[in-house]
Amino acid sequence: MRRGGLVFTAVLIVAASHASAAGIDLSKPYGDKYGCINRNGQEVAADQMLLLTDKELITAASACTFSDTKAQADGSLGVTAKCEAEGEEGQAPTKFTIKRSAKNAKKLVVADDDGNVMGEVSRCK
Image (cartoon, rainbow, N blue to C red; front, side, top):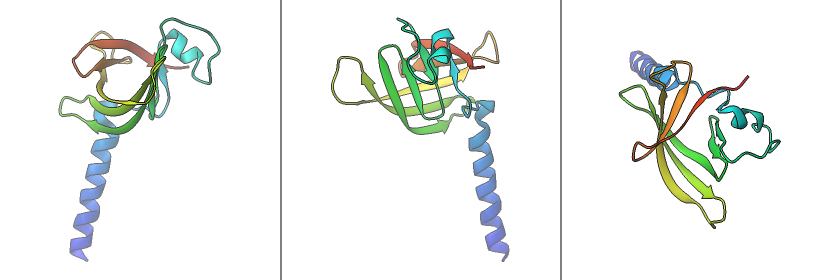
């Protein structure tokens, strides 16, 4: 009995720490202006677009499906994904980081594995 309680408590602690991930909640989509407009399908053509959901990252030229997300020690989310780029065949594995914007805590910044910022997004309304 006691042993089962400890396991259950440990599972709850792990689940809670994973879910909070510095308050980064992707249950509702984030995007730039055109990403939010297009969140339900391509409604407006745009050269630049960024849409972030709990399952994918979509840009004007690529679509990435998340295979793994992990909370990092600094409060960011590390994401492993498979991406399809426009004009190319197949999917390529990639990694990127999602973190709070230093300028505005309500916004998120998406950066590639080399630290290059792909864009800044706000929660879609």
